[in-house]
Length: 125
Image (tube, rainbow, N blue to C red; front, side):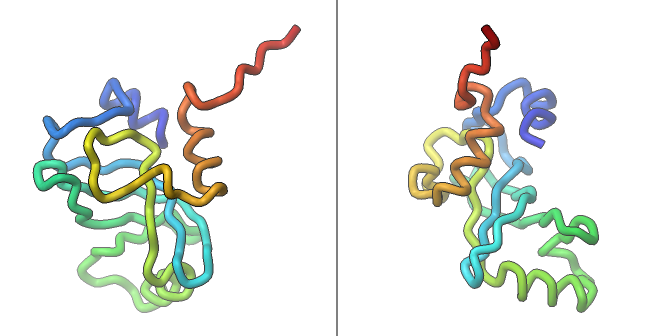
């Protein structure tokens, strides 16, 4: 997802020239620590306010803000995530809502995997 985002936007570092964006994210449930992937929609015109989350699940994508969410999807989100924290795989300049330095190690590992500059040099000798 990160690579596709970068290809579409031509960058993986956004500033506030963008208004609404949907970015790839690592999501961690506070209730049980479940880690998953998804997309979060942000209003960069309002300093990065979170407007919604799309969760990638074994049964498909669940839009947390969907108007008529099926009961089984609501139950899955409640049991799997409850309230949650999220961290983007892209950089957003001057973001005041998400502090990547405070992410748990397992989240940082996933995010670093997405960012080529963070990956170890894998030269074969």
